[in-house]
Image (cartoon, rainbow, N blue to C red; front, side, top):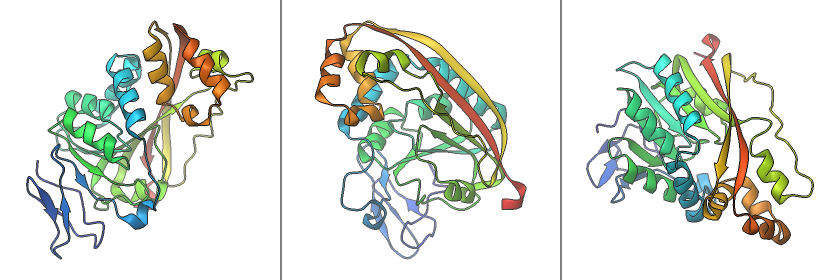
Length: 274
C-alpha cells in the first residue's frame, strides 16, 4: 500500500516506504517489522517506561474480541463509518490496539485505512491480522501524520488529544469515538469489588468539534468460561488497580452475565478550526 499520510516524526516530511523500511527526503530511516508495521515512536515521546498495553492485555483483548462478545458495538461502528465514508476517504484509527475494529471497518468500506497505537505489541498483532492496512507504532499525542489528511478519525477507548485529532482531520472531517457508558460491566464490578461504582459519562462538548450525536449500545453478554472472564478483566484498566482479595474473587468466577454499555459519539471538525 502506498503511504498517503505518514510523516517522519523527526522532520515532518512524508515518508516513502519499501517492504523493509520508510525513509524521508532528509534520509531519516525507520525499519518495518516482519509483520509490516513501522515504528515511528521517538524516545522523547514515550519516556523510559513501557507505554501502551502489554502483551498480556493485548492477547486477552484479542481472544475476547475474536469470540464476538462486543460484536454489537463493532457493527454499530461500521454502520456509522459507512454513513460518512466514500471510496476516496482516508480513515485513521488513532489507538487501534490489536486491530479488531480496524479490520472490521476495512472490510465494510472501500476507503483507505491507517492505524496507530503506542503499543508495539498491539500494532504487531494488528499488522498480522490485516495485511492491507498500514499500521504504525505512534502516540496519539504526537501523531506522525500529515495535517489535514484524514477524512475520518476513529478513537475507541483511547487517550484523547483534541489538538492532534483536529490537526490531522480535513476541514469538516468526522471524528467517531467510543466510550464506556454508565452501566458498563456493572455485574463484573459487583462480583469483584466491595464498593463498585458506575462510570461517569463526561459532557459531550469538545473544543474544536461540533457534536453531531450519540448512539447508545447496551446488551447483556454471558461468559461461560473462566478464561473469557479473565480475558475481559485483563483488557480493562481495572486489572492493574485490583488487590489480591479482588483478584481471588475474579479467579473464583466460573461464569458471568454482565451488561455491556457503550456510547458511540460522532463529531465534525468545527469550521473555525480549519
